[in-house]
Amino acid sequence: MSDHYQSLGVDRGASADEIKKAYRKIARELHPDVNPDPAVQDKFKEVTAAYEVLSDPQKRQSYDMGGSGFGGGFGGGGFSDIMDAFFGGGQNRGPRPRMRQGQDALIRVEVDLNEACFGAEREISVENAVACTKCKGQGSADSAEPSMCQVCKGRGETQQVQRSFLGQVMTSRPCGSCQGYGSIIQNPCRECAGDGRVRARQNISVKIPAGVETGNRIQLSGRGEVGSGGGPAGDLYVEIVESQHPFLIRDNHNLHVAIEVSFAAASLGTKVMVECLDGPIEVEVRAGTQSGATIPVRGKGMTRLRAATRGDLIVHVEVQTPHKLSRDQEEMLRKFASARGEKPGDVKIKGLEQGFFSKFRDAFGR
Image 1 (cartoon, rainbow, N blue to C red):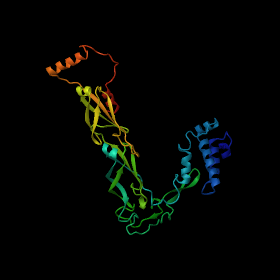
Image 2: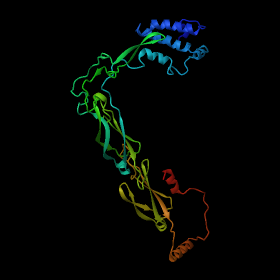
Image 3: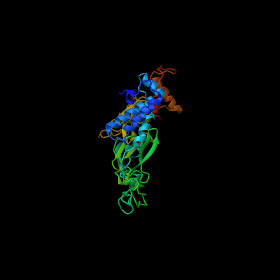
Image 4: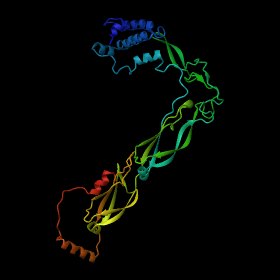
């Protein structure tokens, strides 16, 4: 890193006026309008950076103590402001192209669990920037080519002379007559006002692959917004939002469903019909099944994205306890308890724990 005092040719004890005079003298000799050589411009930036530090008392003190002098780099003003004055505020030199790449677009599509599992083809309506059919994207009503701007002579920018402490400084700015394009459309299309594109609603067919879930995005290349001046279109991204199923709960590739069976059916065992995405299927509840037990049904869950396999359907069993009994039912149940050696008041102490279905509902936000 060069020494700022050496760059300006002053002593370390130089006054603020001496530093300013030294900088003005060197800057006039190295100014880009006087000497456009790249090596000289680098030297000019070096002395300007030195002046930015040494002309500020706080930065100079920091520099004298061994710091860089710049609190947060060149982005905090000062040096960047000076350089902007010389180089046109960081703008690209030359005319802007009329034809530009279009922007990407995003639309969200809601699908049900069945569509997410097996895939679907949907037609969506999208309002987008499309090529103007009247001028075919050219922007001109008579198909004439844009003519050169007479203000900037096709450069896309104009130069102004401003007075500063350095003397006269030349600055460049985008041309206000042609908006920086360097050319002017003499007879703009009335439909698109010379932009070459208009907003219109389109119907687009989207193929939703099997196995998608909320947050997945489908990319449709070239179906986004058309660029100005007939530029190529961006991409359209279709984001999936999965709607909630009435009784099936998704857990990645598995599906969960809860069923209720009677005390007698759970004790003796039974077969029940359970509704799933494939329709009703038969599920066996084995004798002695306890409340909270799970029965996995292989291959009846969600399709794995970009794979031919499926997850499982997990059937959660809740055993019903009857609320009201007739006298005959109550007598039969007492005889049943007596035959099993059960006595009134018998209890088995277990650790305190939350009911299974409560935990299941909490886990899935139900």
